[in-house]
Length: 144
Image (cartoon, rainbow, N blue to C red; front, side):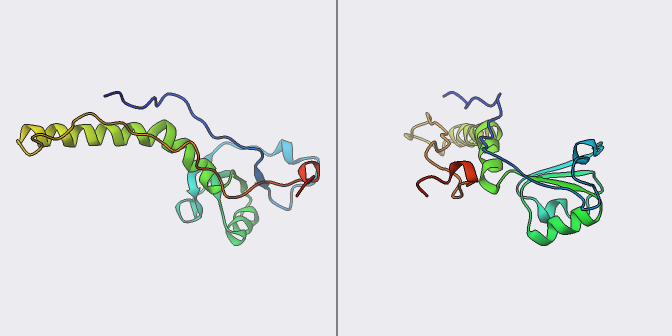
């Protein structure tokens, strides 16, 4: 048995959605001071709601959650729902799951409740799964 490699992060993105307070003029958005960040994979609206930070970084927020955040002076970055979860599955969750399954099997073997069953296993994260959305821009609309 070999635990999955959980040492590197892998969020594969073609772009990000960024929202800033409307009071910040164009050309000055790069000057926004960020000292605190709230991070949540997937849909972070309910988890990050009311958090007193300068930047919310998540997979997705609803339109109204993003508006409320920017009206409160916060910046928002969304990286698309499943993209943020997929990296966590590959780098953290698969190794945690492997450890839990390994411990459960060992406990069952020790209690003579696993007799005659296989103890070798693998945890694999799908390589064919993908975000259902594609980001389309003026540059990549050919053939659409």
